Image (cartoon, rainbow over the protein chains, first blue to last red):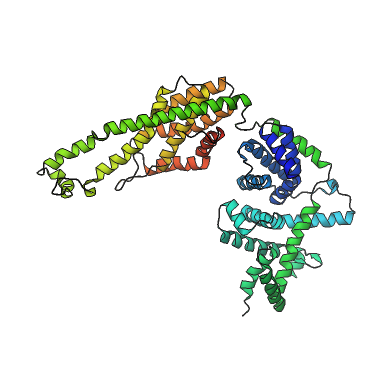
Length: 187
Length: 307
């Protein structure tokens, strides 16, 4: 798998676009999910993740095989996300009719409500906090690795993540029975 | 002694898997003993779980990905890779590298020869000799204080003005190699060589500008040499851009085009630029990352290219 990936990357570095697309297909889903968490919007996630691929394609010549391709790609992802200037769309997605996964209507509604609530909670975090949380929680990076990637100290990462988790906890107020509504909170 | 505030911080670390197994067990026991901490722990854990669940439910179905890939492919077709060299170009670059290395070595030897030739006839040193011989001159009292009885100069004799001009002259000498290249010494070389030399010259000029520091007692660094050099390089930059377009080296043209505003900014600096003026250019240099791009170009020429 790794050999095949290296072979594809070398081909891509020599200008083979198809090879690059094949490499992209290996990580496209992973990258898209990160972008989706970050932007909280499908269309923005698509644009942002594709922007990462474009940057990676342009900079592929500088990839020296000293780290794994994904590590290199992740650094491009971090830089692209941090440079993302566009404001995320305020309107939350309402795509119940577009839910492509086969599931019962009740489940779909539950997911929709959960997603809206989670996106809202993620929206309470600053972009840097959100990115740190994704790198820690989704990507499994250590505080030191995040600090190195984002150009800050491990202490800053630790504090930011603590604040992020507490903000999410307060905003989501998840009970064992599921998500509570704002009305529940006031009770 | 249990402290809820401290434990709360540790809960975040526990949930984010940032503590060791032994500590983890102790912390879980501590959380279990405090109802408040247990509540924080369970709700924070549930919040993170909700994030995971929400993310999973929003992953598009399989039918989405062919569309995504087609759209990405369309975008890639409009985005050429930077510095992608054909095998012919690579062969050309190898020759260019050797030529550039030879030229650089010749320049260094020439500069060293010049330095040796003019070292003893440095006008500043010449000027200081009559001062030593004429102690009655009130302006020359300070340096004379440092002249020992046997007539030899000590370090103290290096006055403020001398140190300033020495810093400037050493920087000038370091950059003189580039000035010679700019003046057309390598004009007859192939385009790749001239571009490589020019890119290196710009990089050195920008680095010199960025690293210029005022000498003691001055508020701003002396940038007159950088300014003169930048003025000379603008013409060369334009010529090479034009030639790069003609030979289809568009990424190179793009790179030279990115460097041009900086050359213009430096060339148009006033005689005594304020700190703000130089700082704004330095900030732009940092934000734009042009020095790294120029370096990247040199790196693309290969590890054996060591001017």
